[in-house]
Image (cartoon, rainbow, N blue to C red; front, side, top):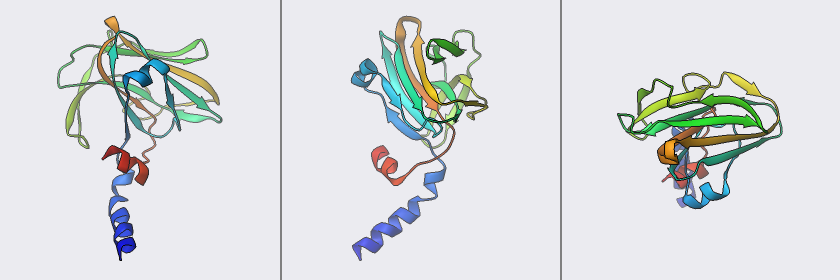
Length: 168
């Protein structure tokens, strides 16, 4: 009976699994070592805070992938612009300069929070580019490298049960 109840619980959550990004909290330790992005096409939101140094995310893909990268700052008003660079090795693919960008207010219905939406490699939270297999780096920074941010990566909505448990 308990097994049946457990599977019913999973089935009830399955509609939720198709409509949310995977939240990832970035600790100070993670930021110091660098953050590995697994499955770069899968939608994830990395929540971090710059404390004097840029944060570096690494992507290693064995095949081509739909690439999306965007930056957001929490709050209904822009507290501090945050920027990012997407690189393939040493080659700059895209620079999202938050100081030159016209930020937009955005309400995130799943979390019930306001964000300011900044530059994105893609459009409207969706990938518009396919990148070939290889190693990539996303460097997040701001003036003085201070402030909270959310880095959105990928646009394929996939929220397996394990991620639901981690988010709870």
